[in-house]
Amino acid sequence: MAQPELTIAYRRVVDLTHPIRPGIPVWPGDPAVQFETVATIEDDGYFLRQFRMGEHSGTHVSTPSAMADDGAGPDSISAQALVVPAIVIDAREAAASDPDYALGAEDVIEWENRNGTVAEGTCVLLLTGWNQYWDAPERFINLGADGSMHTPGFTPEAVSFLLDDRSAAGIGIDTHGVDAGRDAGLEASRAALRKGALVLECLNNLDQLPATGATLAIGRLPLVGGSGSPAAVLALAP
Image (tube, rainbow, N blue to C red; front, top):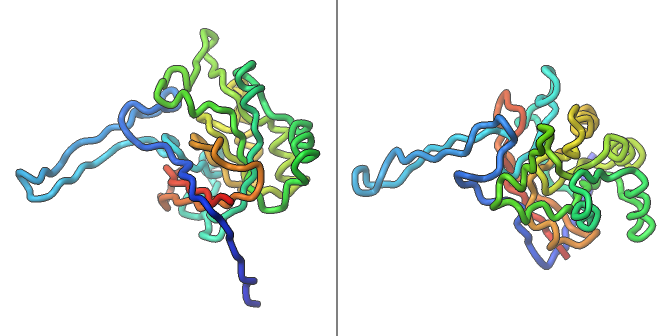
């Protein structure tokens, strides 16, 4: 059966990707981003660098293989799954007053009361305002004296509600993880990845998107055997 023709209407293209450079925030224990010049115009007639970074550094997509030995990796994400409608839940006020804020299912329902039911196949993006700290890595990671990260995120219950009750395609956030920092077991990530959902992290410029009506175009490296991949994420916005 032929696939139905799909149309995307948009006025603006918003880049949701952080530039990659040395010194960007990385998950505690992950390798720092490094660049090394291996050819110069003066010596070789062309300029070339090699770089090193973790699969979960910068704007990135996490895949089931990050949590399970038999999980699918970034090379298994279909092209069809990389173009997806998106909604934005604005939690900046809550996150500003409580860095450990975690979006609950009741918060999603409250958003739906104002904007309509989350449509099937949607990627749900949580806007916390955390991207404002990107150039201050210690503040972005916000590691406390207790050894825990204090950053906002999703509760596992909200993830399960979105995937099971609303058939969402995935979740995304502007912090370093979809889990609130207090979720030491990364249960929100596990709930999403068990379902094979898209998980996007370290997104940028979510404040430039409307609550509804945007479409994401996600570019990922099909890293064979990987746990995730750096990603270039564009939003096509009305």
